[in-house]
Length: 108
Image (cartoon, rainbow, N blue to C red):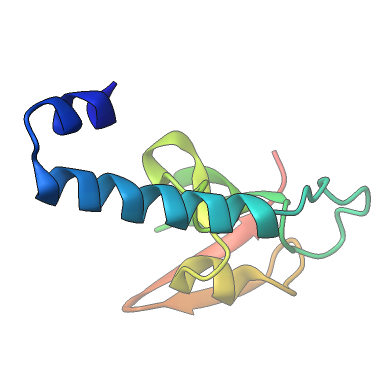
């Protein structure tokens, strides 16, 4: 729809942006892999859901996902984010430092 509108008004900038976005998503789609959450919850890794405790009683739960799926406000965290990178390979109860704060991994 957006492409048809851009064509109808001959908006070259919009058509170029749409073409660029299409190339990007086509490339991402062709290299995407389905990764199922691991059955073993001993270590934090890609696909895991982890609950962290910050400042004692503040708890946040995230699932570690790919960059395109990440939306922290909805509970998904990119595996390349500083917090996820600090958590990957850790076990329940481990404390990690992210920036100027600490977080402890746990299971709910």
